[in-house]
Image (cartoon, rainbow over all chains, first blue to last red; front, top):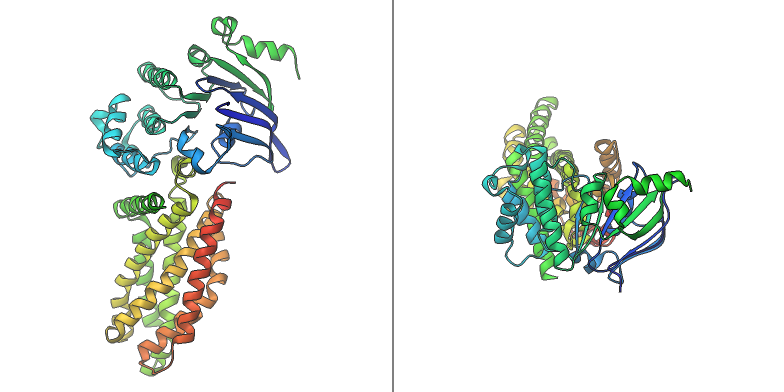
Length: 233
Length: 225
């Protein structure tokens, strides 16, 4: 059974089709780099996979189940917004999300997650006082907190310095080693290619390529874009 | 079910904690209520009996407007940093999220009402202490009705550009039956009338029950666009 299946997913915003029959699947343990130019529909697809938005047509399944309900427990989502509260401290934020996600010992898990992303020293600091990079690290800690089986990450490398990128890489490798399935949209293709086992390219709402990451892609991150730009759909 | 109810309490506690830290809605609502009370006390030069005739209406109009400032913040609080997305994507069912938001808004509005009540008596020379407990029961019931409908509309309008304007336009007309019942009961209690409040009490209770059930049922459709 696939961890993620999107079957001919259409999404209209008014008359505009943001997704046009996007079909895509990921096996358990896969790390999918979801690529595409601005406005290609990456965020829309991730939001539908996370059950934040309903497809106009088509179907999405997580481990064979339709989105929502109990499948939410198995998903970790990091969107464009960091999804933490400015007026709560870092530890309060993560403890709250640990409680909501059903983590066994939320306070301990929150403290460990903050240490892991290098925010242990500022655990009592309010999120509003953090730099952009620190806020992104807090968001990453939040998304990984409940050890989800499926991670949906929208531009996770945004605002991270090299040390934080390394931390995120470690977290992603750990998650993959434990069998998690990852779908991440990104424009930092080089970083994504290092981890990806599968690459999907979205172009104007359609998945024009979905397959294993190849040697060419790793050697030349722009290769896939060029290939499909030369062959307009 | 128990875990979901617990999640609702966690959400309510988070809202109350952030509100008591920032006091954004609380300060605005208390200031608004006190200013209106002062203005009313100067605006009308009424005989004592006439004052008691309008006492219930005056009280609930103030609570209603102050309540708008509270309920408007309930889902708007989740807009910065896209926190609402994280809550909706979490295993917490939408009804538990709604319940948590309703509990926190209800608590805040009750705080505003309890702060305003002594000033209401003071500025308008109305004796309210004698009937405090029955009135407190009425406040609990009516405030829940105001809150539960307001939080539902706050969810509906959370992504609307003019949400501050849209919320009262949608919310106030719906509250007419609830407020008619509450105003009549408040006036009767404050005047000390020996009237049967049963029909009005039933009206308020039924309103609460219907709109609580309806909101809990519909909130999933509202939040997942």
